[in-house]
Length: 314
Image (cartoon, rainbow, N blue to C red):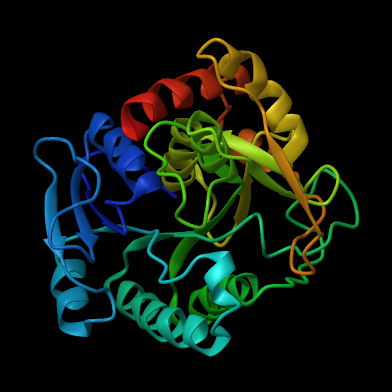
């Protein structure tokens, strides 16, 4: 996939947590960026010169008008999060599948490039081996993961039948500055904010689930690398390659919280059937194809997160 620094890049869902970090890096690379978001005003501040369009990507006329003037599309938008997808699996499917498939069709018709941001945490299901490579079986155990995997398959379909130029990225669990706590995603921000407020952290099971945590700027850099240098119709895992249980994370947080007179307080709850026990991603293919590497060490990322949360929570 040839890199075009002068391209107009549309980021659907680009005003959210990951999107705001991604847009910064796209602008730094010399791109002209437009963000499409559902809110009247963006939740996160966007760099100067970035155009913000308020609207829903299921609005076909709006999408067509935007695609007419943008050569690249990064699709981050998703109507639900893993936890809420269980409450109404049909809504998860209907809100996300039809507009995304329509997007594939419209991008293919214009010969544009698309990066589909999928989910490395849910599409694989229970791991057969760790770390998980892109060739690992995909047997998701959540509606969210099923829909994400279905979108990937439709992208392949449109590549084969309509010439869609796409790359798929499966990211691990993002954390870091700007991740709001208590929104249904983000164990690190919610746990740290809870402890800073003197509240216990809920851990399901004795140690909690093992996850791959990647600092948000590293994740954003990986998406840009996939856009610039990723091979067409390839899937790329995007993670740290290190697995940490919930209790491992809390142990790593402990000295940082003691510095501000906060203590670790855990409420152990029964394990949940829909929680995959362990998910750790092997990102070797992305590294080999694009040269991407993660740069922020976990402890450094936790410290940055703590400092941001101190201003956010007070």
